[in-house]
Image (cartoon, rainbow, N blue to C red; front, top):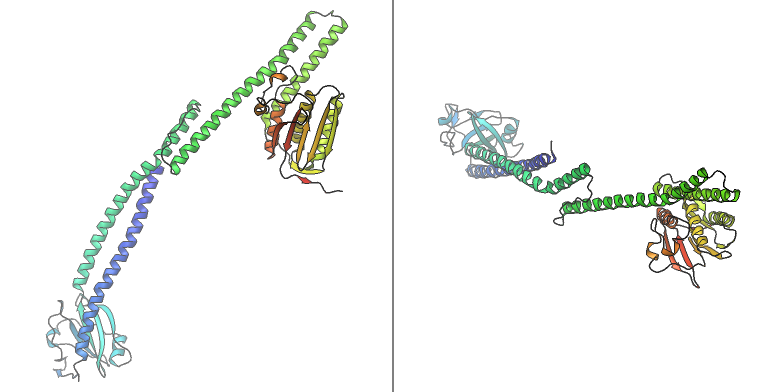
Length: 453
C-alpha cells in the first residue's frame, strides 16, 4: 500500500472517529433535551394531581376509580394508574382494556411512603412510554405514563441525519486526504525521482526544485546540499587520483630511466654505478613515503586507537627522530607536560610532518624551535616564511608553493597534519614568525597539564 493511500485512509479514519464522537454527543444531548421536556410535562401533571386534596379512591365494580378521566392511551394525553401499597392497581374504566403499567418494588415503596417520586422508561401495550411515579395519599401512588412516540420519531430521524452526515463527511475527508497527500508528497516524489536518476546515471549534477519554506522545501534543500557535497567529494576524489598519479609518475619514471641505464650498461664504472644505485634507492624512498602519505589520507579516521597520552613525551620522541635524520640542524624545545586524548600513531605522524617541514626550509646549521604550552604546539623555522598568497593553500593536498617546487616532497605533509588535527577536534594554522621564518601552530582541545609524578 502506497504512502499516499495510507495518508488518505488515515485522514478518513480520523475524520470518521471524530464524526462518530460528535454524532454520539449530539444524539445523547438531543435525547436528554427531549426527555427533559417530557419529564417537565409529567411533573406538571403530577403537581396538578397532588394539589387535589383530599384524595378519595371510589371503587366502581371493584375494578377502577373515577378520580382521573383519561383519553385512550397512545396519543399525547397521559395515562394513569393507581397502585396501592399492597400492589393492587386501579385504572380508569375506559382504559381497562389497555395493558397495565408495570409495578415493581420501587413503585410499592412510593405507595407505602418509603421513597419519593421517580422516573422510569417502560412499554405499555407495545407503546414506549415514560413513567413518573408519585405518592398521592397514605397507602397509594399514582403512575403517570406519557407515550414517547414523538420522541422516538425525532430520535430516529436524527439518527438517519447523523448517519448520512457522517458518511458524507468520511467520503469528503477521504477525497480531501487524497488531494492533500498528493500535494504533500509531490516534493517527496521529486526527491525520489531525482535519487533514482542519480542512482542510474551517476550524474550528481541533478538538482530538485526548491519551493516554499516548509519542511518539504527543507527536504529539497537538504537533498540538493547532499548532492552538492557528493559531487564535490567525487571531484575531490578525481583530483586526488590525478594528483597522486602525477606525483607517482615522476619518481617511477626516474626509477625506470636509472634501471634501464643499469641494465644496458653492465660495465659502468663503480662510482657511476654507485651513484645510480643511490639515486634509485632515494627515489624508492620517495615513492614509499608518497604511498604512505596517500594511505594516511585515504584511511581517514578508520582504525584509530584513542586514549590518553603524554603529548610532551610524544613530541620529544619526534624531536629525537628528527635530530637523527637532520644532524646538521639544531632542534630546541620548551615543552610543558601535557596530557591529551588521541591516537598516538596519528599524532606522532602529524608532529613528525611539522618537524620535517621546518627542516626542509632550514639551512644547514639552522635552528628549529619547538614549544608546547596549554595544548598548543608551535614549530618555528628560520626559512623564508610563507607568502600571503600561499598561506590559504599550504594545507591543501598536493599544493606546493612556487618556492618549494625545487625541493623534495609531494605537498601532502601539511595536508595530513590538518586532517589529523581536525580528526582530533583541533586546528592547524600558519603565521609569520617574528624575525623571519614560518610559525606553525597545532591546537588540540581538552589538553590538560600533566600532574607531577
